[in-house]
Length: 267
Image (tube, rainbow, N blue to C red; front, side, top):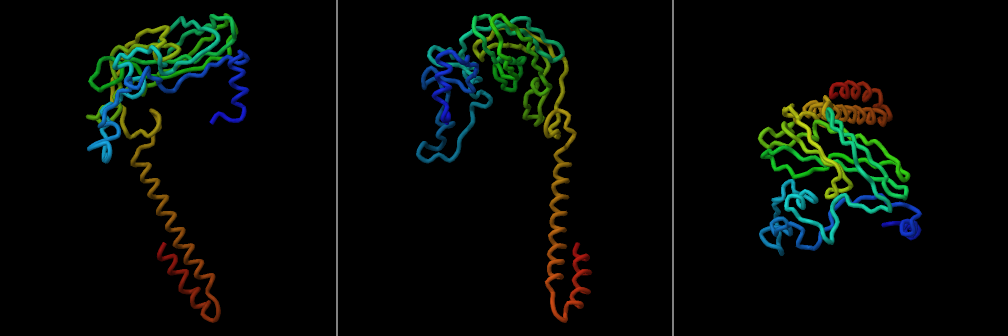
């Protein structure tokens, strides 16, 4: 839902008061037949009127990755990452050093505007079903005046250079020559280069988030179990105290002597 000010917003873009810089997060196909899908993927099997299960035969080839793998060219549709602007941008000075990708974006037009630079990575030939190109980073520049430049830096992490190996059941750091492509969309590549990764290893699955979290799955379960047991102990003790405080009359002293030892024994 665009909101109450959508009319003013569209008018500002149409009349040039604002220079748009948004990008498509999906692919717009040329026509329906471009979408690579089979009945086993949707609506499912054994039949369209009573589907019970589906098979994700596309594996990693989802979205723009499938269009790249199938070599589909865009004539009337729009590729992933596409966007419009009232100005144009040039890319130059690509450099790749120690996982840091740097390049320069220049406003080569006559209207001030911002650009969303996108970094796509091509893996070495491996038998893990990796897509042709994968988006690994992007950066929106500040609003650049005509002729102004910005030096952009994007960092490639170890995880960005890894692929999932079902044999190890872990992320595997891939060795070999990687292709770096930087541009304005998945199909509008402006500069590209290569680098070689000599390091290869299995990134253990026991790290939860990030590469150096230091928190293992087993430790997390132990902490959760301890918290649950502690909560039950507190509830049991609280219940006993509540019963103790509600006792009235002549039996109060007797109950006080009985309930507190019992509550402590149950804890």
